[in-house]
Length: 358
Image (spheres, rainbow, N blue to C red):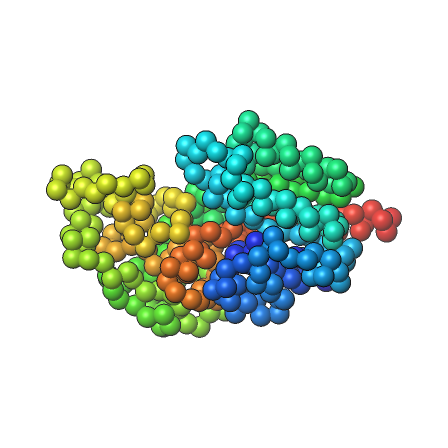
């Protein structure tokens, strides 16, 4: 079976997509204890290294996997690239965590690697980081392709854009540009979960409504119970504000006395049910943090609804505090997008095997 290492794994969005494609995730690394625990509970057979990658002794941890892994995947944290207006990008250590990803690739020498990050990694500093990453991996025999992919083009009901850097040793493989899936709206993704009011719901419950879209049926496959579907217990004034906002609208319908200061675009806006979601962040339970108010109910979306919009199957259960669960969902690579890239790599592996056999 084809082997994969997942670095900076988070809750395992990238891993889950590769697993669904038939790859065997043999090792994952995640620094956050609560998130690492959630990863392990969903993918029990994976060896989890819950440590800071900058302190790992690479030969000690990865010796058995040297020259014995097909793909290394991962998304080095990107807070430094995400800060709007930051002028000290070259001084921010968080912008250089890709070096530790490189160190593992250099030691293990997989046939492929896949790195995920925010789109800014390809343009920040006049392309400084992109050029540095390319030079590092090209110096050890990899040919590189990079692209900003929209999850919506791969069947994910969300306008999430992420940069991917794909490397192949002794050859080049291009990233897929789309997934061939039908486009999915918010209603088609979460309409079967539209019944909770503020403060309602249980962490484990029965489904109340039947699925009515192919996407919902796909997300429910294999899940007998509904998990993580608990509505935020909003304040009276927050509910009052949400009641003032019609479907598809936002803060322009709030009286001046109800307007709040916010750095977020889309604050107090309702999701538009016949469109894809905006990018799911780590604060999707807060109406003032973006367009995260339910299309017609007076509450923010739940962890399960956000997970659906990220293309996590209902069998994937998020553990830990609610804050951690939101972090797990909001920072993840959509599994459906990951799966499409994994399929492209798998097809290339099979093509190479055919060429060798012939």
